[in-house]
Length: 159
Image 1 (tube, rainbow, N blue to C red):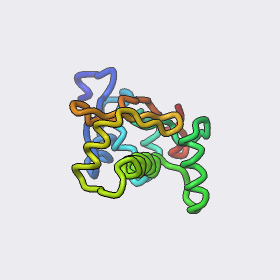
Image 2 (spheres, helix red, strand yellow):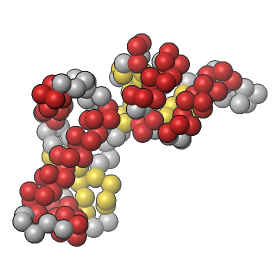
Image 3 (cartoon, rainbow, N blue to C red):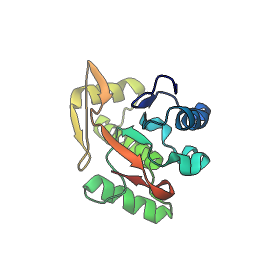
């Protein structure tokens, strides 16, 4: 990697392989490292320590650490009630649960996997207070939202 002198490293990995891959890229490439959002779990950042600083992650969710939309305010309030710190992992789960609950509400009493799918495909867009998801018969992705976050000092995410 060092002989190629890359201008950037794009890391397409997750799980236990992330920590040694980042450490090797830092040691041998000396270039900015970009990774997919699934890599930025709190445990990975803690394992990397100061080596996590400067990592850039693509995110498919809004920035959860500022209460500037209804969904981030709702999430922050839910985490405060639970006595938990805000983090990306929980926010991703929170968004998924909110979508599931809304789909269940719209489906009615006869809920099955197929009825939920039918509801999501027919309802089109679901607004979650500053974050929208949309499905259709040929679109099962939900969202096209993409953002970038960078790990700052102390493992904090910055935009």
